[in-house]
Every structure is written in structure tokens, then in C-alpha cells.
Amino acid sequence: MTAPKLPTTLDGLAMADLQRLLAQTDAAIAERRVEELKVLADGFARKLAVNGFSVKEGIDALKPYLGKNLRPATMPRQDQSA
Image (cartoon, rainbow, N blue to C red; front, side, top):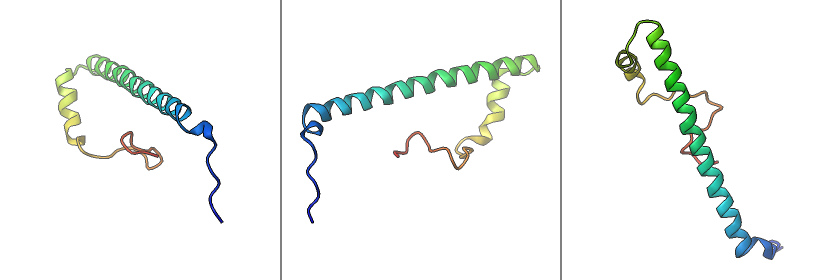
């Protein structure tokens, strides 16, 4: 039994449209991640200051975590494709 042929709407221009939409979606997700990181960093810096710590002290306290995967097992890494 042969595999069914893909409809022509997936060929040519339609496929290019899907790829363009995927690229736009990926760009929007990346932009959102950058904004969220800025919000987290701002909140962290403010909490450090309120508690009498400098940003440098906070950064130094985070250094042991560099290279460690602290994500829950259910969250895929951003650089992995689904």
C-alpha cells in the first residue's frame, strides 16, 4: 500500500507561508523570553537591594548554579526541538 499524496496546498507557496509563520512564532517566543528575563532580573535586583545586598553579591551567589540544569523534567529546553 502506498502512502497518500500530500495535497498541493502544502506544496510551494502554502509551505513557504507555513515556514514564514513558524519563523514569526519562534521570533515572538524568543522576544517574550527576553522580556520575561528582564522582568525577573529587575525583580531580583530590587529584592537584593531591599535586603541590603548589591547586584554583584547576587551574581556571585548565583555562580555555583552556572551549568546546572535546574528545570523541572516536564519543561523542555528552549534549544531542543519538539
